[in-house]
Length: 130
Image: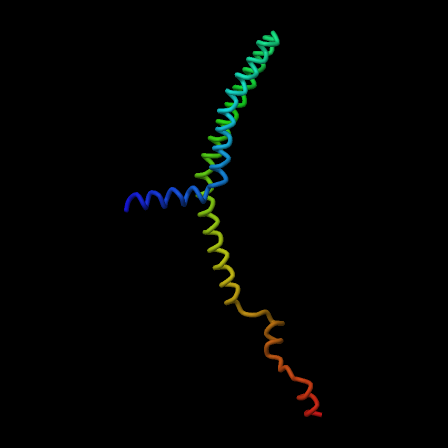
């Protein structure tokens, strides 16, 4: 029973935050592939005897990795912010519903009251009165 509850909670939150989870996974995969791309670049530069560009390749590799990790952390921390804002949105919706109910209970304006008390007559009624 406990496993089912855990599984249900896991899939609920995974479905709820699927876009953010996918972007975090994608960014971490880019960080992992940056190392393999770097090793290919190092092999190419050593074959061409252009070792002066190794510094640029190393800095680029680590800047990509650090940026992806920091951006993943930012997105992950944003998961918890959104749950609070959703609660605030629900509160605002409830307040708006209360305002709408209060507006319905208000009395009509003077012009609206005159219109409501005005007796509407059809064409047949007007012809009978003549």
